[in-house]
Each structure stands twice: as C-alpha cells, then as structure tokens.
Image (cartoon, rainbow, N blue to C red; front, top):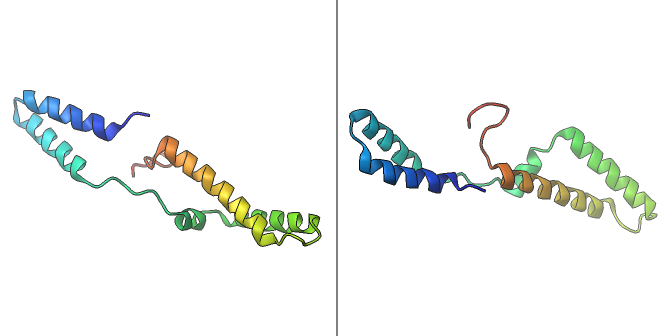
Length: 109
C-alpha cells in the first residue's frame, strides 16, 4: 500500500528545490502545514462498536441466544456475543487497514 504521507513529503522536498514563483511557495507552505499535522488515530474498539447499527446489535443478540440454546445453555449467550463482536471488529479493522480513514460517502474528511 502506498504511503501517501511519505510520498507527499518526498514531493515537497523535491519541488522545494525548483519553486520559482509565489504560487509555488504558497503551495509548498500549504503542503508543509498539512504534513506537520498529526496523522489521524484509528478508532478504538469501543468507538467502532458504538457505530454498530442497532439492527446488527439485535441480530447479534438473537444469534448469540440461538447458539446458547443449541448448547442447552451450557455456553452463555455472552460468550457467543463476544465472538460475534470480535469478528465484526476484525472486519472493521481490515477495512480501515485497506482503505484508511479517508473519504466516506463521497465527502471529504
């Protein structure tokens, strides 16, 4: 995956050598300011779970109860729910890892 931050820094350094007019200097100043900003932090597990739609929470609760009932109650629904939440978090982390935290629904972040 391309490290766009590093690429931008490299382009900034190279372009800085050849900047010849005020517009170039303004662009370099803007790029330097953007590079100075801290990188966004990934959301915590708690934040990701808070974003889970209520319908998905309901489905997970129902699935956990069904699985618990299938074990005649030997395994409590909470254990199944933890597994389902863990799987949902793994999926969310994979999506964030692949596409990052950039644009959502066509809007700039």
